[in-house]
Amino acid sequence: MSNITEFFIETENQLEILVSLLKSVKPGDLGLDDRAAYNLYIDESCIVVSKDCDGRLQYYGGFEYVDKSERKEYGNWVFYFNGDDRVHNHLRHYYDMENSK
Image (cartoon, rainbow, N blue to C red):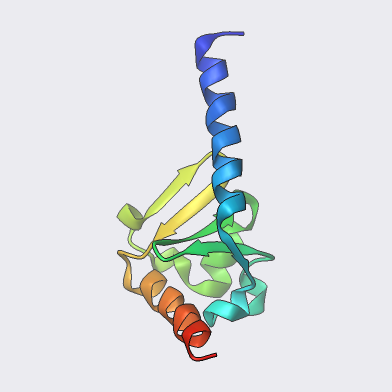
C-alpha cells in the first residue's frame, strides 16, 4: 500500500473518530426542517452532515446559501462553520434552547 493511500485511510479514520465525538442532533433541534437531514453533528464551531445528506441540508435547510469559505468537505463529511450567519444562528438556536432547560 502506498504512503498516499495510507494517508487517506488514516485521515478517514480520524474523521470518523472526530465526528463520533460531536453531539448528534436532529434538524429540528437546530430550528431546521426535519427533512434537511437524518442526523447532524455539532459543536460550538460547526454543523457536520454526511456527504450523502448534504444536498438535503442545502435544499431543505437553505445551506446552499452558506458562504463557500465556511463550507469544507473532508472525506465522507461536510463541515459548515459558524463564521456564516446562517450556521451561527442555527447553532445559537440549539444552545439557547439547551441553556434554557
